[in-house]
Length: 210
Image 1 (cartoon, rainbow, N blue to C red):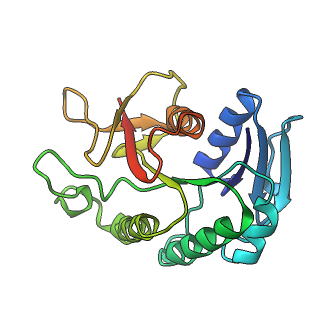
Image 2 (image 1 turned 135 degrees about the horizontal axis):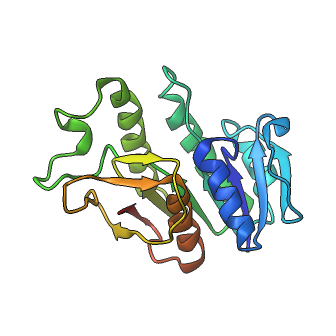
């Protein structure tokens, strides 16, 4: 398996790189600043790339089986996520990579009463622009002819432990017996790399939680 990961220096991106390397896959970290990549492995190659430039995406993605996007826009520049999505789709289509897997948002997941998480009263106001951008990006993936998989995390995703034990859902938020929805960054990475290999959710969205 040869996979290229965009956004490899972010919190989730780093976890994905580590998980893929752990399984001895050939990993390419595509980043704006290669010096920010601290992970070292015989299975890791680091390249400079611009996810907002489809030609750049095409150039670095050629020869890979799949592309993973862990890209996240800066606070206040949430709309850039849609520009990155369009660029990524165009670049993927021309690169010959078989599919793209996306680190998505949780805001568009449905709660028990059918309401989107981002529309609930408890959802943080400051996060709504990013949640809306992720929801719009999901619709771009749903409309494309490129094979894609969109993985929404639980309501809360934070650094923790890699247990390999979690539950999987589709468009509804995964919650525990107390109604809490959470996943560690490490287990989220396990779930996404599992999907990279198993391909159970091609051209669909899934979510993970405890």
